[in-house]
Amino acid sequence: MRNKIMMIIALVLIFTMLFGTGAVYGAQVGRQDYNQVQQQIEQEKKKLEEGKAEEQSLAQEIQGLETKISAVENQVAALQSQISTTEGKIAAAKEELKQAQESIDSQDANLNLRLRTMYKNGSIGFLDVLLGSGSISEFISNIDMVQKVHASDKKVLATLKDDYKVVKEKKEELDALQSQLSSQKQQEAEKQAQLTANKSEVTKKKANVAASNEARQDNIQDLNAEADHIMAIIQEEERKAREREEQERKEREERERQQKQQQQAQNGNNGSSGNSGNSTGGDSGNSSGGSSDKGNSSSGGSSGGSSGSGFTWPVPGHTRISSNYGWRICPFHGREKHTGIDIPAPYGTAVKAADSGTVIYAGYLGSYGNAVIIRHSSTLYTLYAHNSSLVVGSGKKVSRGQTVAKIGSTGSSTGNHLHFEVRKGGNSYGNDVNPWNYL
Image (tube, rainbow, N blue to C red):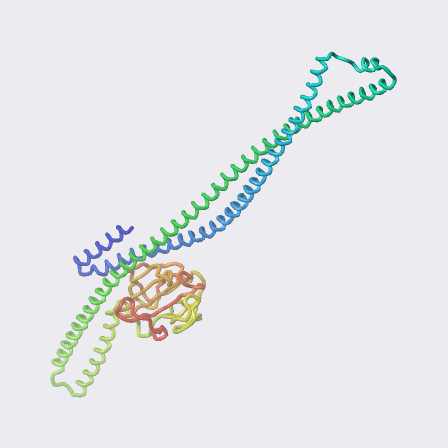
């Protein structure tokens, strides 16, 4: 884009040097390009606003992700606590299993010892012991001993059975805890992976939006710089054009003055020795006619100058003024000088040229929105702002009362209306003056 703009600027300057009227054409071409740059600036600003809105929306999304991250972190912490508890239970279960196994081993050793003793001494049944009693008291004593041995054997067997059952249950509990621990560790790994992914997504989105908005901001700054450069060239070309117009006007007026002197001298020779009163009357009439011709010449010599009756009303049928010329409190800029008058009208109402002239600007003009500027003479301009659409283009000649735009609310505006200015002066578009002095 920058190379294209610089090429257009170079062509404008070359054309200006080659041809005397090139400044006007170059200014028009440059202004068209300036309008394009302004449109691009508005487009970039719109994209930047969309980017900021996206950034705000993304900020909410990021906040949601961060909330999820916090929740996942809490879940991970809870899982880690559960894992720690499970590991503690596994350690306790292993200790209990160890103790049960030791009890079984001890009882097995005692039982095996008794069996080995019985094997060495020969198997003696309880009945043999009782029948071998030498007396009633020994028999009773042997019965008591046999009962105790039998009870002890039953207790040992029952204890062994219980111990084997405990060992089995502890092994099953241990297997279940090991399986639970494995599941919990897998869940923790999945949550950690999710946590990492969420954090990575948040970081990436933040970086992308920030980089995109920064790039748009840089592009807007570059476009503004190009627009300022083009506008400086345009203003210089228009200044040269105004100087040539002023020089041509002076030369034209000088030719008309000389022609008038020649005509007066010729009329004086034709009168020769006529009646003095008639001569005076003829001079007076000629003088009056000459003055009228001069006024017409001056009016006709401008670029469609205003008529003697003043400018025509720019929005026919709508005469209410919502904001007058002068100091006011602006909803956008606070206390400021209002450089024109505001005329409310429905959207799309025709905006008329206050007088004939040449359109020197038609496009988007900052806070003016869609605007048209008409030059009526080398020092007199009218400006029509906040339009919804423009009907004429830069360089077009317009007549008094011709439609140049349609009412709208573009730029710094709070509703459908025409902002109408009259500007006077030789620099750029002149300085604002009170429109009521011309309407």
